Amino acid sequence: MPPDRLSLVFAGDLMGHQEQINAAYDKESKTYKYDGVFAHTKDIISAADIAFGNLEVTVGGKPYTGYPSFSSPLDFVNSCTAAGFDVLFTANNHFYDKGARGLRNSIKNLDSMGVTYTGSYLNQDSRDSLYPLVVEKNGIKLGLLNYTYGVNAAPVFSPYIINTINKDQILADIQKVKSKGVDVVIAYMHWGTEYASTQSKAQSDLAEFLFKNGVQVVIGSHPHVIQPMEWRKDSAGLDNIVAYSLGNFVSYQRRRKTDGGALFRLDIRKDADGVVRVDDAGYYLIWVHNYVSNGKNNLYVLPSDRFLSRKEVFADDVSFGKLKLFVDDSRLLLGENNKNVAEFQHISGRWEKKLLGVALREPGMVKGSGTAP
Image 1 (spheres, rainbow, N blue to C red):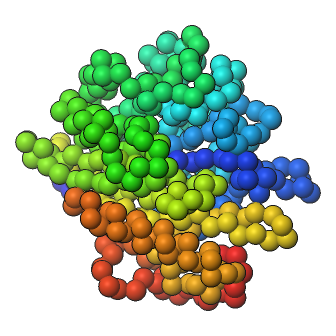
Image 2 (tube, rainbow, N blue to C red; image 1 turned 90 degrees about the horizontal axis):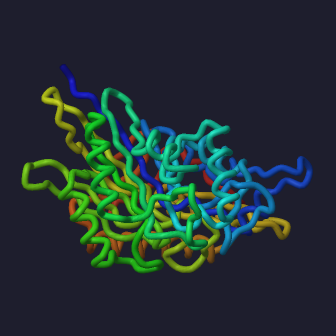
């Protein structure tokens, strides 16, 4: 019997700054249109069997606001799911920005849209019935955990719940999800120090705690910059994976190292003996381009490997220089600190390991003319 296989893609923070809200607004229809933001990465995200992202905004209704108290239109989430995201994590420091009312409305809106999410709940009964989330595809059953170090508008008032990092609770949740017969336990952790390019000791220690107690994959968010990744075998020869932070998938943060992020690709298989193993793991760099036209921002999440060879499509050298700087910074950091996790390129629907020194170009790309990608 051939093994069952599953491809997973994890993204970092899905943010909604005020500039993004303004850029998405269409005056004629008086609606918000985000689809163009993900036009260049939709094929990459949707090609995965399951794609995950961290929803770091509320969707609790008007007024729509950015930092420091995020509330995005429902169109933002609709465009995320249309771009291929299958599961959204909500245990983060911004999902309670609008207080109890915002959390309640956000959850009800996600439910009404049919979005699969985890990490936040209306009450304890809801958490007990819905958490940990179990997702099954291609004969492989995933158990999904999600926690945050805290929330900005603390405290979270009863009966509402956002999962926070508590080792006793995590242990109980691990045992519960194992009792559901899952093949892999994945923990998406909102942790670490903002803008720090390497993980803290607290992150490393918590990752070890998770591995020791049966979690196989740990994915991180919150620092808003990329942090190192590691793939190793435990004492029993099973795979342990950690990506400490994937940075921003989409945001309006424009400072160096915050204007992009990494997708983390994981290919797993379930052998005839019922054991799930990792076939391959790697990262893929994305960068958020802001193109200004007629005084209005236009944001695009760009696949870095496709656009490094397309300088001519950028309206100015500054934008292309920022893309190149982000890629250079990221490759230097990950090249020096990653363990057994290399860079992927995505060509004609295929994932391939990037070869050092080889120019990356998407076959069949048509050159532009100094306009927006």
